[in-house]
Length: 310
Image 1 (cartoon, rainbow, N blue to C red):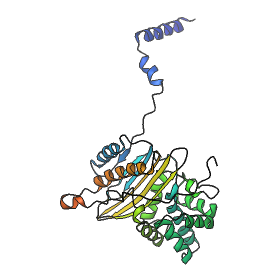
Image 2: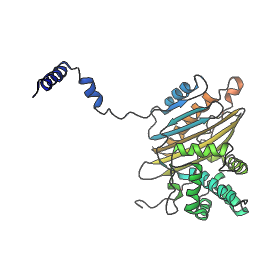
Image 3: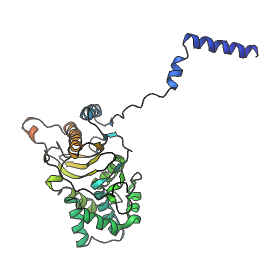
């Protein structure tokens, strides 16, 4: 061994003996995976920190996997938690089905037929599964994938063999969809966007749970929810909503699975929603009571899934 190599070996040995290299060794050891934290940014001073604190508090001690998306145009505020985590869509995908139908009609320069309009209304306002299956078959995979590409919803994977409720969705893509529905763009016409919002605003009371919880009376509420129970991941419970009026324009997506019951998932979503609405639209005085309170008996249509093991 050369003098230089010998000297270098002695230096390293001395450093090891003194513990000088231990921090580097420790840093190289993978740390235990940390629980993902909600991340917020905002154009309004202090709002991001407040939302991050309050959403985190709402998540405390809630079991299951929870993904959150928030975007408020008025304050350029965004919050994200597990934005790219995939979930079985359940009935939330019905907004995508309607958007695809309207996108395709626009491409062919036509209005919806009365039959299509009737099916669309049943699909969104009552979460009718048979109507959804009819429209899903009519559109076919090529048109559905075509819309997803046009919308930039690259993380959404349509369910196969007609099982639209097993479409894989993410908070990131649901927020992209809601942004398209709520602002002028080249994918959906203004009439199409207004039609989607109209139907989401007419959802029956038993299905208006979730993201509308705690919304102030000064905003209009548009919502679509979904739930599904399977052997793995327990109950999937989801809610997407848009809220506008009184100078406000924001959208919330909350996707969950691993819930012990549907009600448990609903409670989780509504706790998050209440925190967001309170921070974005504070109300004081007598107006403080003017917050939306969903039904205490939430309902949804259970989507068709393959038999166990299928």
